[in-house]
Image (cartoon, rainbow, N blue to C red):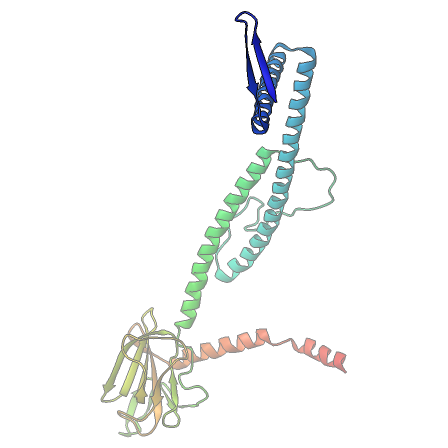
Length: 331
C-alpha cells in the first residue's frame, strides 16, 4: 500500500509505502487511539451527566447503582442467613454441652452457677411451633455470637474445675489402700492382741498375716511412692509405700523385692514375693497400715474396698426382675 501526501503551498509531494507488517501495525495503532478517545469521551460525558443530572444519563446511573446495591444486599443477606444457621447449630450443641456438664458436675460435686432461671445449671426450655420469623440483622447476630462466646468461656472454666475435682477424686480413690496385697488368701492372724507364735506370750500383732505359698505375688494396696526398701531384723525384707495424706503401708517377710526406694507404684502392681525372712515361722506376708504415724487395723481399708467392688458389681448387673422377665421372654 502506498500513500501520497501533497503540499500545495510548498508545491511538493511525499509518498509513504506501507508493506504488510507496517500496514497491520498502523491499523492496530489507529484502532487503539480511537478506543482510548471513545472511552475518555464516554467517561467524561457520563460523569458530567451524572453530576449535572442529565435526564437520560442520571436515570442510567440510578439503575446501575440500584442494581449494584441490591446485588450486594442479596449477597450479604445470604451470608448472614448462612451464619445464622451455623449459630443455631452452635446453640443446639451448647445446650447439649450444658446438659452434659450438669451430669458431670453431679459426679464431681461442683455446684453449677445459676443462669437466672432459678435453677442452677438448668438451660431454659425452648421450642414450639414456628409462627413467624424474620431475618436476623448483623447486629443481632453479633450479639448472639458474643453471648455464645461468653457462655462457652464459662463452660470451659467450669469443665476445667470439674476435671481437676474428678482427678483429685480419682487420685484419692487410688491412694487409699483397699487392694488386697495377696488376693484370694484368708487372713491367718488378725490385728490386735494375740499369743505370740515364737515366745508363747501375749503380744500386740500390728498388722494382718496372709499365709500363702513361697514366692506368691505381693501387690501394692494402693498407688504411691516407695519410701523404704531394706532388711529389718524383725520384718525381714521390708517395703514401705507412702500413699499421701500421711498414709503408709508396710509389706514384710518378702523373699524377693522388685522395687526400690523412690519408685512410683500403681495399685495392684507386683512389688515383691512372699517369703519367710526376718522373725517368721513360715512363708506369709505381714501387712500393716499407718495413718499419721499410728497403726490401724488393715481390715477396715480392705473391707471398704470389698464394699466398693460389690457396689460396682450390683450397678453393672441387671435387676433380678428384668432378668426373670428376659428369661420368660426367651422361653
